[in-house]
Amino acid sequence: AWSPDSEMIASGSQDCTIRLWSNSGKLKGTLKGHSDWVRWVVYSPDGQLIATASSDQTVKIWDALTMEEVCTLTGDWDEMNTLNNVAWSPDGEFIVSRSSDETIRFWSKSGKYIDTVRGHEAPSQFLHPETKVLVVEVKNVQPAGSKRIGQYIVTGAGGHWVHVYRSDSDGAKQGKPLACFR
Image (cartoon, rainbow, N blue to C red; front, side):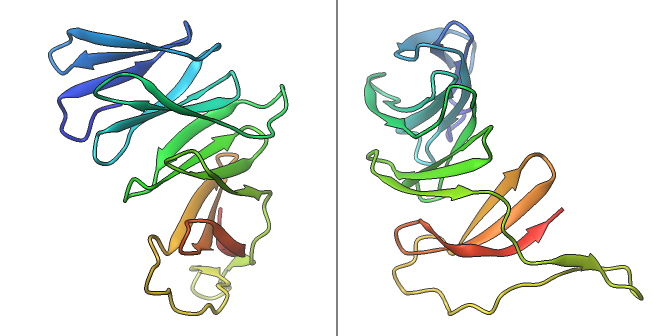
């Protein structure tokens, strides 16, 4: 993963570490703390934090400057599930992870658990019989509140579906998906 300023690169490895490299290829440091393959690495939008997802069933947040672990996020994953990826909200206040059990978990950057999205509940979709345009039923929702950080949460599921949820002012999903695309 590239840092937002393109000065650093963070890479995850099967040896349970994350290595930080300068953009010229010089090793700057190694982050240790996971006990299994580090599958996903991403910098926060401001470049100050790094989130990592591992096969050890944890997401870790690291200080990019000091290279110290800030916190560990754990879910109710069973041993058969794998954390596939992790991402930051555009404002850097929230973290979302996706696992092989088709759940999406949301946390604040301080590690507070917010919500879990499960399964494939969604409005219908179809090809219009005359125009052949994809039509997606979207529920009528109230306008976003003034304190809203992000209006929508968009997730991919199983490589085939994209779900769009409304989010509340804390970044948690609200209700069932507004739309589902295949």
